Length: 106
Image (cartoon, rainbow, N blue to C red):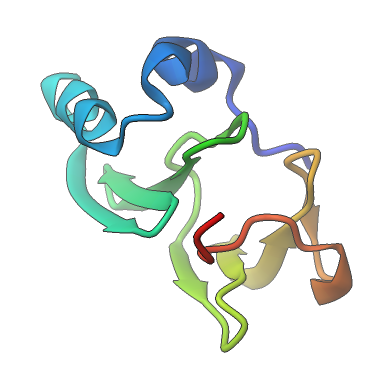
């Protein structure tokens, strides 16, 4: 399953390198609770979480039950009760070795 939202990406492509401006634009569109961590912004809407990965083309809709980081600071996303990682193409994967989205600063 590809989790990259083309609509969200287009909405924020011009500001993905500026986290403060991205958060402001999301707030103006009714999104809630922003938690920036290094190059990752976790946001919420309607009880679900989404990710914006600054400096990449990975932006998701708010579709995850929960997001977290493991001890290697790799993003984990819970979707329909199962935990996954996100690969470089924006697909969910159960294999940590395929994980691309990391909270480590670039």
